[in-house]
Length: 271
Image (cartoon, rainbow, N blue to C red; front, side):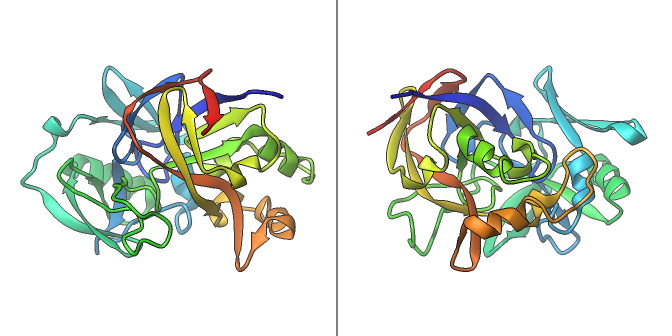
């Protein structure tokens, strides 16, 4: 029997912008360290994503010298942003809306607002979720019975997808798609296609995670992350064999029960 091995780790410091591949990461209470702690919002404070602004895919990110660099290669423009909360001005707090949640946040800077407003083409603010902000996972307790927090991720702190699941999808497509279409945190090898659908409690290395619910997919999966061009696939094909009720599922949402480090090569063990 093949072992399931953690093969890739990704974080997305700014929601719906380009991700960063890591060899290891810190599991914190609300997700991986730096993952989706920043987000773009419009002038009304409503969150912005590639669903409505596919051009956000062209904004790439990297961490250098404990700072976040956001850049758009075609226009050769970039901005350097702080990552640590101590560098943000707590006097610039605003309430923002993400789905049904209202969250306290900090406006990062006027420079950041101008940079993103110019590149995306709509006036917006870049905001940061401070440690004191507590966004609760599944407040109606439909899937999660105990108290967990989450960053600006759509609903849950972590997402995992098996490489075999992507391989199975790609075997049905005329043109294969990369894993970055699905904006996952964890990828694992060694498993059967879609076996993560049936997971409950498991360990990555020494850390305890729980599979909560499959991830419902949206139009972002049809957006090429290198060109921002949108097509019908892979959502069209996924809907032919991964539709449950009115939703197309791919990947599994997770919560964690402890904090610590995960690294590529860690074994995944069901418990």
